[in-house]
Every structure is written in structure tokens, then in C-alpha cells.
Image (tube, rainbow, N blue to C red; front, side):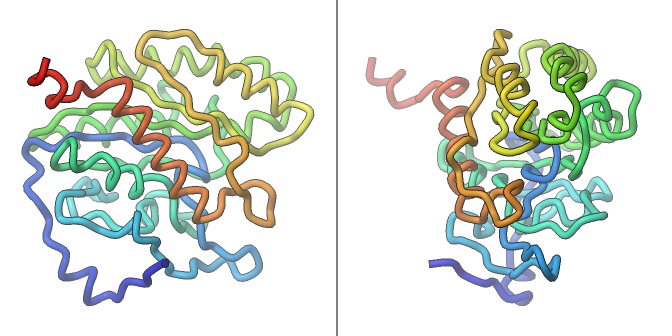
Length: 261
């Protein structure tokens, strides 16, 4: 059952110390920023927060002013400011990994309607993402992964779809160089929507990318809203869990299994 949280309840959330947190960059376009619960006709968010997306004292977000605060939906409200933001995958991801990781820091960077060429090194979106990631570690903690959900805009033209794989591989290389994390885990989402004539070309690039520490989860089959573009709230919750499963299974060693062996 979904729960709507009052403003007083939000204010009661306590922010943990930023020291020692496990930091995750949330980047891409609208389905990462979150449109779950945003009604297509009124462009308003319904304010409904599923249990899996509820705030928790061990989950922080880096706000637009580069300050840590208690994380709550919508995570991208002060980042993707030209559109109405709702539920995305970030909070369900964080709640799914926090018991294994402890303090989790989320760095929202996604902006709706953006093509991958707009995320190239030197472009505003890329520079803002790396600036925010650098600011996130100043008080302690470590960037553990980039969660990337983008590509719908690149289905709008055959040229962009054809160039997607090369552009994504370059983006990964540049992010790792600029954050000085040579093997930074990248978990990308294979898109579930877009222009049909180019959709499979982008998905092929995402699902077939063969780079170290790069894994992909597939959004195909997750429920879409009536606009046939954005994931529903329920689908975003599922996607967050999928991202968490991918991170924990590929990049986290179980201390229990290690100690028992």
C-alpha cells in the first residue's frame, strides 16, 4: 500500500553524517529523474510515495546547492527543474542496498529530454554531473557507481541511434578519468520506450556493451504510463530493485560468505 508523507514527517527526518557514505550518481534523462505519479493531463505529481521509496535516516541526497540532506521523493525536483518530477528508481534502489552498505549518498543529475551528445565532456550536463560528483566526496565517502538511464532521445534519429554505442563508451571513459576512478562501476538501463524504428538499435548498443565493470539491466516489460514513454510508479520501484540487485551481485562481496568460507 502506497503512503503519502506529510511535510511535518519529512522535516522530522534526521540526516546522517556524510562521512563514510557510499555514493551513487543518478544520471540520464526523464525516466531516471522520475515521472512516476505525474499525471499526464495536469503535469502534477500525486505525492504518493510507495513503502519502498520512503525516506530513511541512512539515505542522503546532494541537493542543487551541493549540500547533503535527508533524501526524499522526488529526488530530482531541484535538478530537473523544467519538468515535474515524481518517483524514480533512486529511493527504492537506496532502500534495497542500505542494509548491506550502511549510509548511502545519492547524487541526482538526470535531466529529461536530453540526448547523449548533450552529456559529452565539455557540455553543461556532463560538467555539472562531474562537478556534483566531486563535491559529493569532499566531506568523506566514495563514489561507488554511476546509475545511467538514458537513450530515448537518441531513438529520434537513425544517426544518433547508430552513434549511441561509441558515445556511451566515450562517456564512460571520460567519467572514470575525470572522477579518477578507473574501474568505476556503471549500471545502465536498456530503454523500454522511444521511436520504434530506432529503439532496437539503441537497446542493442546498451545490452551488448562489452566493457569491464559495465552491466546492464533491461527495462523492457516494465509498465509504462499512458504516454507510452515514462515508467509508472510501480515500474520505477521494480527498476530500483533491479539496479540494486545488479550492484550487489556484481560489485559487493558478501562479508557473511567470506567469513564462513
